[in-house]
Image (cartoon, rainbow, N blue to C red; front, side):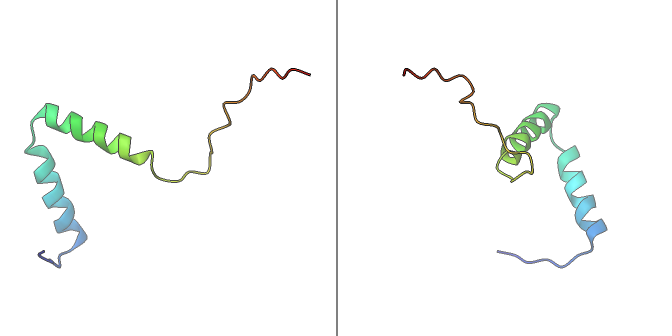
Length: 58
């Protein structure tokens, strides 16, 4: 593993060059992958229970 020390501007420029070097379809798939992985992050809005239609027999 290689550790590099550089400024935020340099790091962002490298990331931008890497991203722009990709084909459009590769960019799209990276975007979809990012959106899929964002679902793992915690949020303030929790999903409501899907048990909203329960019929109980007496």
